[in-house]
Amino acid sequence: MTSAVRLGAGGRGPWWALVAGLTVLGVLEAVLLHWAADALLPAGPARVVDVVVGGATAALLLVMASPLWSRHRVANAVSVEDAGTLVRALGGPAATLAP
Image (cartoon, rainbow, N blue to C red; front, side, top):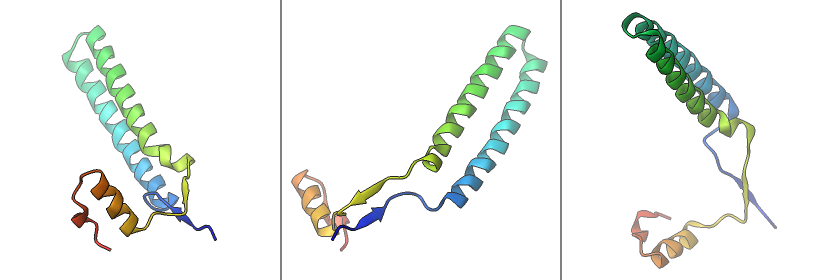
């Protein structure tokens, strides 16, 4: 009989909330930096700040939201004893794996 183990960081509800919160913070950060750059820099460098901050914020949100549209399952999950054998074979401290 094959068993499937769900790997992930929890349900989708908390992830949606996290992504929504980070979106709000990212937009707030981008707006505040836009205002500061417009006030302190000439037009050209201010636009560069806008593009860099907007791109970095969008990339972070994309990475944070990526678990929401994918799901991975592992069949025949490895037991802790098997993982300890693997870690020992690779030369790592298997004592950190408590059964």
